[in-house]
Amino acid sequence: MSIYHEQFMKAALDVAQEAYDNLEVPVGCVFVKDNETIIARGRNRPNETFNATRHAEIEAIDDILKDNDISIFLNTDLYVTVEPCVMCASALRQIGIRQVYFGCGNDKFGGNGSVFDIHSDPRLETPKSKSYPAQGGYFRNEAILLLRKFYVRENDHAPAPKKKAARILKTDIPEK
Picture 1 (cartoon, rainbow, N blue to C red):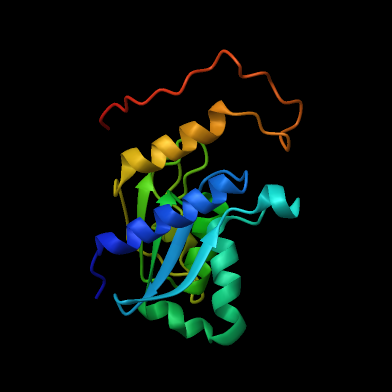
Picture 2: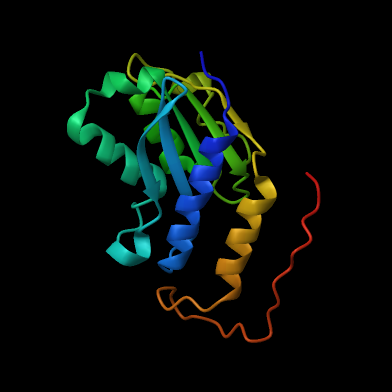
């Protein structure tokens, strides 16, 4: 049975800060086995690797599978600062993650309820792809603020970067 623990979401936020510090979109995650042990950390690395698929979840999944059988995910939960995108939500189904806890929603590419229901859509059910529960809103404001800090600065890896000198960091976050 999965139980939410605040310290794991705080750990994911620390990893997101590391992504931000490395000029990546600040998304961080931790995978927690048996409600008690972090078995992997992941942060976004698309800019660093020039590979758009190197999202935080994929980074951590690859790390876990180096030394473990896929069955480890049956007793493992994901804590991630931003709702998994469609790609990551599908990967989480494939590995059989037990539960997902996320910070803020992903209003453009969310795969855990904001845009698509990849995590729970019964049409996607196969013997090797099972649905999983997902809950959001944990440290939502902190996750949003990290994203805003990133998007207000210049991004040399973005195609045709736009000047952002006139942009200001908005710190007020409306309720859902």
